[in-house]
Length: 305
Image 1 (cartoon, rainbow, N blue to C red):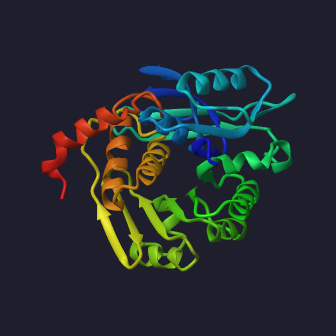
Image 2: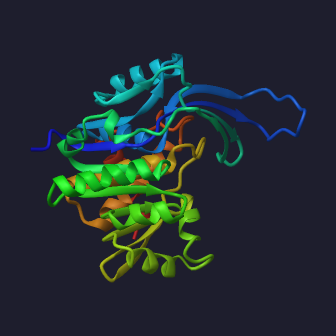
Image 3: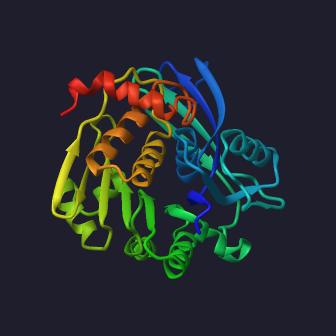
């Protein structure tokens, strides 16, 4: 029987975030207006979102045996995220990112580095994957994600696999075929059609996923369930930082799946959680809890159709 609401397999990063008044030219110095050091990463931040909303979650991934790895481990535990199968690789550097945020727009440029080897299924107990009601994956290491998805599919029945995806190639195509719920970015959608996301939704649906969502930043999101294609507008907030916005959306959407909410309401809820996140620096600082989100949606419901 499941012991967790969601088990996630993916990457985790140590984000160093700084706000600048304007982006500097080469060989130019500029003072940061604000600075924060915090955990990041697609599945990792989605699970933190789920934990804050009230779900029981576990993260499976890999860090180095360095100070960054210790920082990330402690932060997971502080957020209530189980890390029983967080692998620490000796002599390696944890994924580290430098996120430069434009003060005017809240958009960011990210530089990152890691020398970790990809997580292998034989580095963990694969049966642990089956202790979750939902398996949430990112596609950074598609072979690892595919192995996890295939094992989960073969050893469970009636449970969902949710995929966070940006890039597109043959290994990821195999992964998508095992996916029940796909949440992709606008960049991902353009792999299927450069300017018509409706066509992209149809083409992705033909690959197997039952629910497809494309996140669209401040515009909100659009999706397809069965034959229905829908568009859900975003919420207007004072944006400080968009880092992690998609990751938070994914976590909130998975929360809606756990609650068996209507998909349109789930998408509105995920938009709201992601919008609130953007009001503070960092991918996790502004993530709200359930009551804060519901209060925000109630105040803004007159602007939502």
